Length: 248
Image 1 (cartoon, one colour):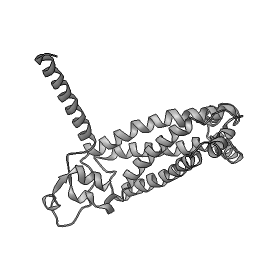
Image 2 (cartoon, one colour):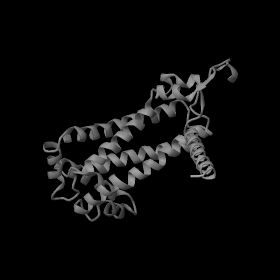
Image 3 (cartoon, one colour):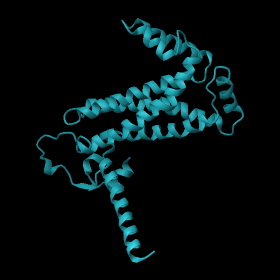
Image 4 (cartoon, one colour):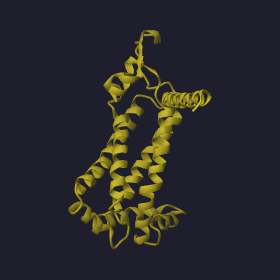
């Protein structure tokens, strides 16, 4: 490699570093107000939800190696996973309880944003994105509930999808679409498996970064107003890394 090639390679590496730094700064600013680092401002609910999402993705990928989405094999594959696969029961339990904990964390985060007024302009669009993410989480739990294909899951989904027929006009059509037929059966299991493992995770992977980016564009977290205190008196700005990283 001659000097010109080495210089070209160094410029390319520098371009990649700048691109990466720019991408990171789009999600997290270089400096943040020190007041936003208070634990009681957010209670860590947003960060907790993110950790649970990645935990669900990781355990979900492991479960896909052993789960068989067929009516005559689904339940047996769950039993095989729990009783024959090393740490299989642990992996499934982590996935199960992380999903339940995610609903709680996301709901509490939803309430925290509402009661602190963090959905007002210029954050109203991000409120819509957060609401959409919460609905995706709920639907992910609902579709995953059927996958064990036991009696409890079967009849719970049968009752829930049966309620759709009461929607005027499109109820029966929507029910048949989700069930993959006139009743809960093999088509329902296939539909729920595809939605749970492919469609909804992709939706969440799109919505979450966009949610973070909108927080960044809106100026970060909302700082509660303090009467008689100007903006310049409300604390200094500190580096986001490591301060914000350690707080999260």
